[in-house]
Each structure stands twice: as C-alpha cells, then as structure tokens.
Image 1 (cartoon, one colour):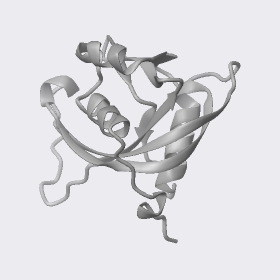
Image 2: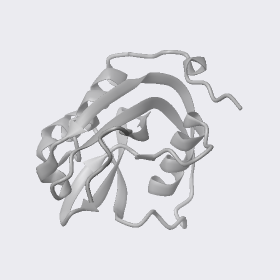
Image 3: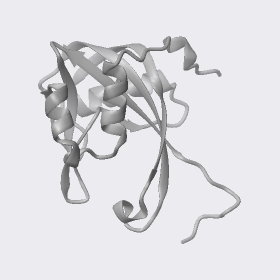
Image 4: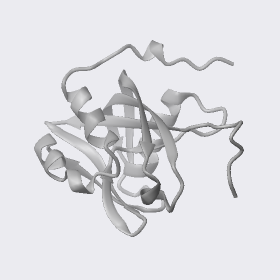
Length: 158
C-alpha cells in the first residue's frame, strides 16, 4: 500500500540521556534480528505530553524512574529504506537530559528490550556500529557537551 502523497507525517519520538557516575544509561534491544544500542526512547502516544512520554519510555525500557532536568534538542533523521524493509521513514526526536531517581529491578521491560546497561561515553562511542541510528551518539554527544535548554521550551497545551 502506498502512502497518499498529499499527506505525510513523521514519527515523533522521545529519548532521554541519563548520566550517573560518568556512565550513560542505554538499552540493548533486538531490532530486525540485530542486537542494537539506543537511548531509552520511543514513540509519543496520542494526547501525551512530550516530557511525560520521555519519563514513561525510560521507565518501560529500563525500569528507572527519572526526572527530566533539561531539553537537549529536537533532531530530524530520515531512515534509509533498506533498514526498514523498503519503507523510508522520517523521525523527529525530542531529547532530554534526566536524572535517575529510583530503579525497580522487578519491572518487566518492553518487548524487544534485552536489558538496560550503564556504559561510559567511550564504550558507547566505540560501539557505534551497534547504534540503532545516528541519533544515538549525536544526542549523547550534545548532552555531554552541555547542550541544555529549559524544559519550558517543550509545552503541552490542551
């Protein structure tokens, strides 16, 4: 089925960069038969405020409750069609820095998530061939470089 060329919309996603003790929280997940690394990230759900989505996705994928402290930025990426079974998709990712609050080791993680793991930035960068997308390192690199904007830049109305 071909999409109507008069109507297009990107996939809106959220991601968090959680840093503790010099390590970054990442998820190892199985995607199309590959074991890849990503930030805690996922799709915005209908009627969900963007910041709330980041908190929810982090909890569902890692077992960690977090508190977003800053907005890192909005990123746009067009995924090549070969990585998605022939369909091109454009992603718009809203990325946040968050601090870890509480870990629930009994929490069942989202389907496809193998585990949450803490990695040093050097370990994460060295594993770039396993990153789910170029967004992974770009967002972490920006966050570690101190890119921070007030959360008030991302507002939910209504």
